[in-house]
Every structure is written in structure tokens, then in C-alpha cells.
Amino acid sequence: MTLKILIVRTSSLGDLVHMLPAISDIARQIPNAHIDWLAEEAFADIPSWHPAVQDVIPVAHRRWRKNWWSPQVRAERRQLKQRLASREYDVILDMQALMKSIWLVRQARGVRHGLDWKSAREPLASLFYQVKHRVAFWQPAVIRQRSLAALAFGYEYEGEPDFGLHTITESVSIQPHALIMPSASRDDKLWDEANWQQVFDDLEQRGLGLRLLAGSESESQRAQQLIAHRANAKVLPRMGLNAVAKELASATIMVGLDSGLTHLAAGLGRPTIGIYKASTPVRTPLEGPAYTASLGERGQAPSAQTVLSAIEQALGPLPLVEPMTSVAASNETPAVSISLSD
Image (tube, rainbow, N blue to C red; front, side, top):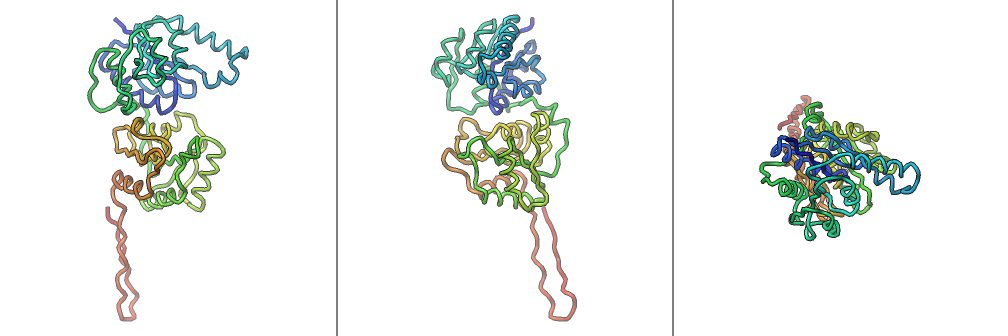
């Protein structure tokens, strides 16, 4: 008998990435599971990448709230309500525990599961669940999500997190370039330019080109300034999530600020270094099957040397260039010996 499940986790990008291992756990533990996922339209590609998700139901709350009572938005909200009401689920699992997710949970039909009062980010949300689960708050997000799913379905999860992103990683090959995410939605997250230049120098000495990501015109301009006069560097144009994911999956390494794309790179199995300055990595560290480093802390950015040390751990030491041999006293042309070693 099929167990019909609705996952509610609408945003943001990094949070949806953190959800993917829990979906892998459910699929592994419950072979007859039929999993639908309710997600913000801008991030709907992420659930679709996981082979265990049958249907992605998009919601446009971010867009709707700008014109909540306009005829078009009212019609779209009505269509979503009808779509949710047309299905009966055995389990509705709210992985977000926010009042904005409760608005959606209450429109679906089925037994509602979620975090209890002490576990939820917004405790009032717990009042609307029929089955409540307690999960320690100060844990990495991936562990919290895997724990909540395990409690809801009565199993114990085990093993390293599986992000289920094989369809993307198997479609690309690794290229000799580094992906860089130097921009953020807030200025207090930005890292000093002098630090970036040291990182760029190191990556270029390793023979890697630089590919910078930017999500807006202002971010693109800032990225262009960072790589001025660097021949093997460019700012990538804005792309959809599918295209960005393939860029990340093909990179030799990813170095970025604490952003959803940096977390996605880690989930895709690329060596990834995250720079934290305005947030703590305690609850949202980078997770993935390859090397990851979550550096810094709220109010305390990592130094350039700390990031360079992490790059060395991920890729090995820089190639060594031997100094020139001494010039003979004779009039012979001096011999120069330069060798590169791994």
C-alpha cells in the first residue's frame, strides 16, 4: 500500500538543500512512499532533482505578498487551495515550523506532523499540528531535518547524508576552474577585497580559472571590480537553478560566502569552503560528501590565511617552483632550472 506524503518546506534555497538527505532517508526506509513537496516557485527545481520526489507543488508566497489582493494573485491562491484539497495525504510533514507554512499546511488534507513548542522556530506553529515531535534546536540543519523525518515515520536514520543529486553530478565533468560566490544580500556578510585577492592569487597559482557568481546587477559590478586585470577570470551571467547547479557540479572547488549556492555546491559533492561573517555555522554548516570547511562566526570573519589553509587541505599544497641555479663565473649562458612538483 502506498504511503502518501506531503513535505512542506518552501524556502529558502539553502534550507531546501538541507532537506534533501531527509528525503533520501524516507525513500530508503519507506519503499512504498509517494512524496510530494510544496516549495516556493523560485526554488522548485531543487525538489525536482531528487528521484524520490514525485510531484513538486509550487507556491508563490514571495511574489503574492506584494499584491496579495490583486485579481491575479487571488486566482492563483484559489488554484493552489483547490489543488491541495483534491488530494488526501497519510502524512503532512511541515519541516519549516513557521506561521507562513501553517497557512499552507491547513489547506492540505491529512494528518499534520511538525515540531513541538520547544523545538519550533516560531512556537505558535506547533499548535496547529496533530502530531508533535521534539528535536533539539541547536543542531546542524541537516541533522534536525533527518531527525524530524525519522520521528515522523518511526525509523532511525544512519549513515552519511545523501543529497540525492546524482542526476546532476553524473551529467557533467570536472573542469579546472574555481567557482566563487563573493556577494550577499547584506553588506555585513561581505568579505574584505584584500582577502579575496589573496585567495584569487592562490587559486590562479594552482592553474585554476576563476568563475564568479552574481545574482543582480550590483553584485555583478562588484564581482567585475574584484577580478579587474585578471585574464583567466570572468563573471558568469545570471542563470536558472539548473544551469547554476551544473556549473557548481563541474567546478574543481567552490569558495563562497554563507549562501544557498555555497550549500548547494557542498551537497553536489564539490570541495567547498564557506565564509561566515554575519551568521553562525553552528546551525547551518556546510554538509556534503567531499571536503567542506565552514569558517568564521557571527561578528568575526575568517582571515585570508585561514581560508588559504582550507584550500590547501582540499586541494593539496601549492606546486613548488625551485629557485634559479647560481650563475657560473664563466661567460657561458646561465642555466635556469625550474621544476613543478605535486
